[in-house]
Length: 424
Ligand SMILES: Cc1ncc(COP(=O)(O)O)c(C=O)c1O
Image (cartoon, rainbow, N blue to C red; front, side):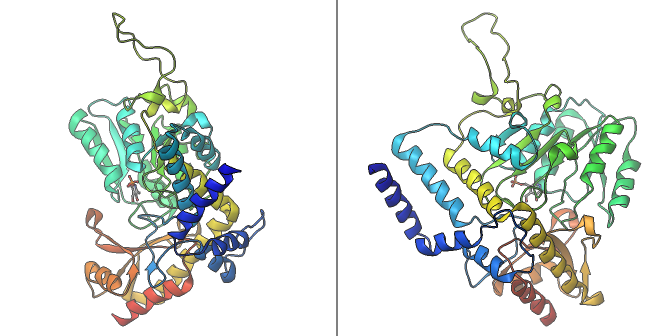
């Protein structure tokens, strides 16, 4: 009884700090339950109810999920509750529960998931754990985010590996051709993103990983944008590792992520980032000689130390939120808003350059473009002045713009961006 009262007061106080009333949140949560049914991607009334559950400012169009996914109220509330548990009662641990849930969500087993804090951390674990020697070649794209470029560049500097690059093409087949053309007797790994941050092409990851397997190469994937946007089945994709986060398309708390390491690849990928969770069995610093570490027989060997159970409660809540709507429904809505954006951009003819493929399998929720006759930085600022948040893409000299659309967005917001393009 007392516990219920305490929980109620906790909930009420966190909700009071938010802009929707508790009643409104409960009612909106009810309205978005899909009960496993299909929701039409153009059922605007339904998606408006979804939007209501986000504390996003009403006078802004946030079209930048590719950088950071805003969390809905149920996630924020779960984080708050988790932190209160930790901070009121001193409870320690509990984050492992999210690992099992994450595994199921991405088509993996619990013993293949290491918790991280972001994509970059997972990429580093994959990069530094590969048994590579001087002269070994690794294939990346010319479109890398710094998070997938820096670790490999650092390994090039430290260990003398060689980085080879390809530019993602406008079709999946051509992308595969370009990767194939780079493979030679020194190639050891393909370290490509699933969806590059620059133009959002969905690369043919399953075929890329199959090619890697056929040629005896490691496939270590930067999966920053996969979970929450695509229907992900990592076992089906067949990669060796997949680094991702919960703070983009999964709409989870910021500073949460995971690294998938295929079970039978764990004997190959060396753990360097080790600590609390990494060890199973005894170790004793008094023994001489001190014994080597008995690593956990699972991917937990790749991370150690304290995590935030509050944040990982939020990760569990974000998976619940996604499943309330249905991942299939979310994917369809994201894809249809992405297509709407492409179609509107194409209407400008040669005045706007669409940089993302229109090929069905190679596009989803992110589109890259350039507006002719105006510097990309100027157009970006103009958007900001008009309360539209997109992203400028300075990476690798691409000098372009990027728009990302998620389930809290709608066509009106995309139209607002198009109006601005029309003006300039
Ligand atoms: C393709 C890609 N890789 C890696 C990252 C780095 O992600 P994080 O900041 O979570 O480490 C990002 C972030 O935007 C990204 O888009």
